[in-house]
Length: 291
Image (cartoon, rainbow, N blue to C red; front, top):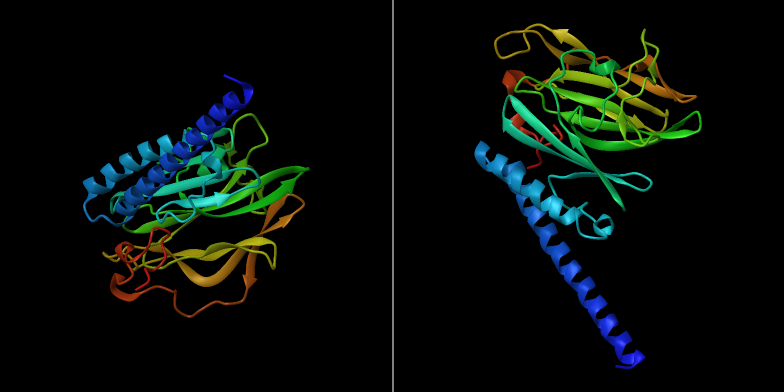
């Protein structure tokens, strides 16, 4: 066999292998989308749990394919995909019941994968603790904001956690990739006594609360929350927004607390009557479902 024939054989084999990888990647991506749809929309709990298990197994197979990092998953409803400089962050939510939610997640680079394990509930001190991927404050991330501190790049991660039938929590966490292993949480939230490693905003399910990054002021803006009697279904006190906004402004690598950013106080807390705006009427991010 001459060199030209050898080259053609190797070329064809290589192309055939690449084509096979592409076909398998497309097949697995379709299955991930299928299971993710059931995971979010199934009415029966055991169907959601089974679909979650199948989706995780299929996602594992997909991620093991060479070059999977370059295959977009952004269009898959049910997965939240955020992109950093050279990595992507994938998270999802499993509703076991109205009072129990679990979260899955992973960080993928072109040549590396780190899985996030939801280990809530935490007893105390989550706002002052640094976690590893094996001890993650599980949530569905919806926004990523890079920032620098002492010439090191970090990432703010804004997330949503559907705690139970009565309350939700929004999270502003810090992803630290400066060491050999990722870390979550960094004492950069200052201006309220002891510096915090993350911001946790817990609010009543009947009264949606905002938390987002505002590029105009260079800060994280969220509702001010107060406990209000009579909000719960049995008249108990629950945390709701009073209509004013607080912020954490980035200054020299720290996010510094501002007590009130806009004067938008309202006479009545922004919540619905008779619990019309319940979790079952919201999407996985805690926003009202579109008709």
